Image: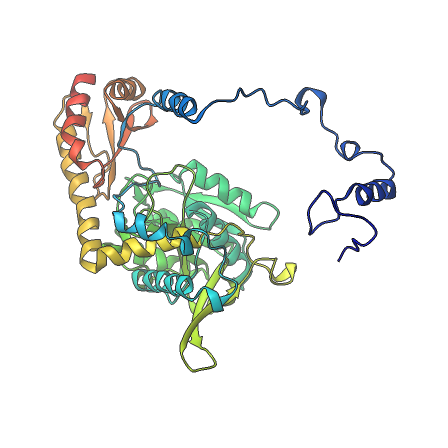
Length: 448
């Protein structure tokens, strides 16, 4: 603790040595005369004491902000490709805004955060039930970082030689780039395997997998919305090469599609923010579940249940694998942002839906995609879906006319879709935009 008896503290913080005398002593110790000499800030960007922002009244500021925000395009989004929007019930919004949730940092002190810890324990339990795998953490930044963590986990636990992480050739570029960043500096390298009509080419995958393979990554649904039909065979191929089988998915799809554990998945990653969060484009929540064998290698944090001194059920953080808490060489994660509040929202949304509600929502994602693709396919100059597969939420549509021009016309009429290439558009429909599908078809017809 700083000895403040020598100086009368008239400025600075009561918790840090920032009086004028103390500052002078520190500057003298390092041989400079001012704090500015400690930094090399170029003159053009150096603060000159003026922010250049005119003062405004509250009324004037509100008027200016309203005018600025009004310039945003008011589009109905039919966008997907790993980022999906579902209706968030008001109960989630209201409850998660309670101060005990909204202002809570990571729940290090179990004696004062039992409620939050219990909610996170329930979140983990929900993921365990949906994936069939016994261990789920709380939680990851997003699906891309969860995939990166899975690859590094595979590199740590695989006993045989091998450094290649196999991913589908149609993986989203952003996810591929995050994975590349995660394995940079390790012995791991990334390889791809072919796809067949939007799904895994299982025979080609079998030829690509060998002793050098450390992990096989498959998505269900794929980035194009197709539903994989031969996941169990993929699991057998990975297991035969002693490689980890990592499955990418999301919490809504898990309500309807094959249970990952039943097809041999060792790790499940993906987006959990499909429930609990509105479309944010930058804010996400990644799910991560795995086998008990890899418990000590799981990144992030785990909430466990036990008993307190009085014999009552109690919750606590039982595993924290970031370098802040354990020796750096033993750390398996550097996740620092508190994702707990986001996981809380997903848990509340799942609990609100219940098993039947989740299945109904997932079923709607299949039916709405099928209905919209049929309507677009009825238009001259459009083939939808491109892939002869079952689809979940989204699908590709091939257009005779240039896809970018059609997308621009759709945007003019208030709709946003993805342009995949010169003649491919991708359309995603959920409960949020389903009421606008007829209008989208009309806008498509006009654009064509």
